[in-house]
Image (cartoon, rainbow over all chains, first blue to last red; front, side, top):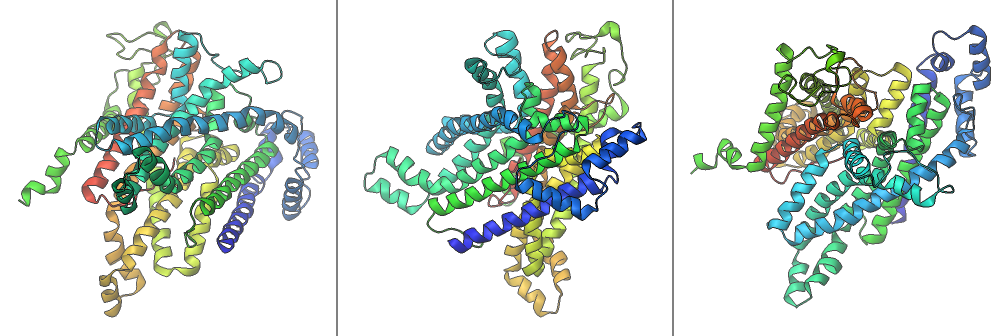
Length: 315
Length: 283
């Protein structure tokens, strides 16, 4: 067990180092002169020189790389050229939008998708199963940003129940902030609920075919206990895997959904930084997001060991 | 008896496969027709006609510049198919070669392929696209590269898994015994035996690629205006859907039906070719 986890930890560290080299290489080495990328072709020579000095571009590449890694390790992030603020300060404010959005969407997906998947497996081959499968196929095919637009059309423009976009801030108005996140959470979570219902259904169907399920039924265990205590517990591994992947999906999803609903989160920061050519922000945020994705993957490995007494060491 | 269970007959009876096939053929037909004919030129601006609801002259209405929505959706099908096809082909060629290599040599080659997969999976496709776009600017080509890179580990993993199980079979040992090298065995025996899983996975990835392209072009990281893409059309629609709600409907329906069609086609193909195939689903 410890060997399995330390192997996974080593693999994650290796991936993180490789990712930092890729990000640094693409943003700092590939363009030749990062200052020129940030300011554009029409930049005055003296402003270019000032920015180069500001970014420390006069130092050799490897010195810059290790300086950046050192800064990241101490969470001493750079300064945004466009916003003239510390990246760390901006991130902390924006995480207050993105973290509730991501957790809300995954929770929504679990609350909707898991019961539907269990229902479909329980009613295998019957109307309920077909209904869930149709929902699942439709949900997988529909892009989340289009769901967002349709929700705005119906619930904001049509019924006036929710705001069409924007975010007032938790301290200013807690209730309104909660309402502002409702539609984005549904838009982000609905396709994930569709995927989860499909995975949960097939995992449950696999375990429901096992001998010990037949034994449990034969000895008269209540159907509810068969489903939830015996079958679901053994179907958890693929279900946890996909829920873990959802957190990684949120990274891409947040960039799109925050731009649909004009939410001032981390995703919107990344998106605006492309338009501002703010390399400092993109470099720091992208590597932090990668770190976050790897952390989630490691957490899933730990959960595997906790849930399943027989971890797949060579997986 | 054999004729009654032949593949075409079983395919005709498989309902979701047939729905998927029809939807996919419709998508391709729309793209092909747009090569020679669209109701109106896709970039023709007619301000007097702007933001019109569906009518006899413009079946799906017009956008904020008076351009015909139907024509732009037809052209958008061409864009989606091109981006999806090229990206999946790139990812498939690179991924299948890597997967075959890992399965044939095991050991360190296998380890390299696994670590590369981890690296790519740690970056969502959108982040890859953002990295590329920041340095090289937004374009359909950069969208293709981003989606293509994301597809490499998907195919590498599926190929590796399927190829490893072929390598364990009897006839491979027979091949080795008569003196065939790993390269000959890979292309004579392993590749033909894993072709069906690759076809099924390719269809599913095509659907994923169309969704990804729509997302990237919604963010402005795909095909650049004035040429249309479905995602970009939805972005434009967001500003004007207060006046003309149908603007936000039709491009989304086009995306959803295309993705649904390809997914049903892929699932149907799996059922028909070999229901035990293990397809990978990552979005």
